[in-house]
Length: 329
Ligand code: ASP
Image 1 (cartoon, rainbow, N blue to C red):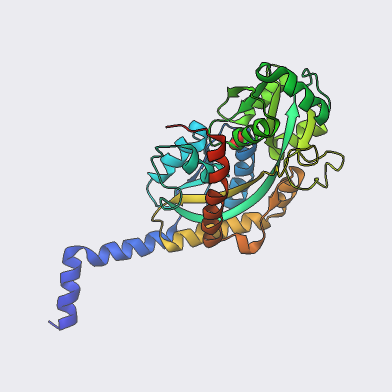
Image 2: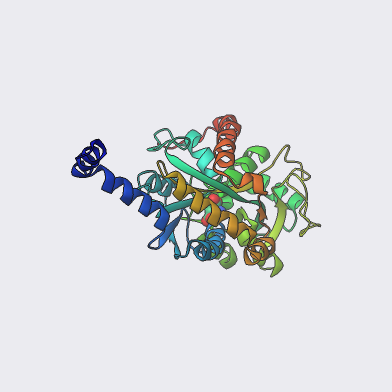
């Protein structure tokens, strides 16, 4: 028996060769079954709408269905924790927004580390927010809203999707800027909050255009302002909150795709390609445009860009959130 045969026999006996071969075959074959894309908020809301738009297109590229799963709770941190603890086999993916960057400051005991417990796949799209009132809510313009807010204070109900949600972040900055405290009404996402706003059970909601634009166009809500630094081309007559006197106010909701820490590099490359293909898909581009979502440029559609952006955003929001002094355990 030659030396190489002896080595080969020994490796086979330990199962080494077969497991390496199986690993290679697995990476080449991925995905062989449906892939879950976890959304941390309620179905039908802004994050969910973006996820479902991407999922349809990613399914074509991956050759397997990408199934959207809503895992609700604690401003998105329940879902983040589920993903952080999932098997890193490429069958559990995650879409999240700025909440990934605000949760490390907002929660004293987070059971995962946003910067080290995930595989970072790609940034996807940026979405502005809009400040809305119910049709039954008296103020019609932002100056009227400000006056009414100062007079009525906690008689006004303001929705949020939990600590870590951008609706909550927007509400915090708004109340801070106006020096008022509204009554917070928590929801599992802003889809149910929108239902309450339309029904007049809720007064005020700050939410992404991916959900609010159809309502604004249908004139079913009152629109007070946009959270971007500049006016939006598709809402040219709507002032920014900055213009209305809320100094330095700016929230742009960014979204990233993640997996659990430890995904194989070739599986990451396949998922990243599926995301990049989706972001070039004319159907996705059309839908994103219709809902005010801006697809990130190609150089941001990488694992490194997402990881670097997340770190910047954690550092950006930490002092602002500490100043607001809102924490959860
Ligand atoms: N807009 C929500 C938020 O406030 C999330 C959602 O329902 O998509 O973070």
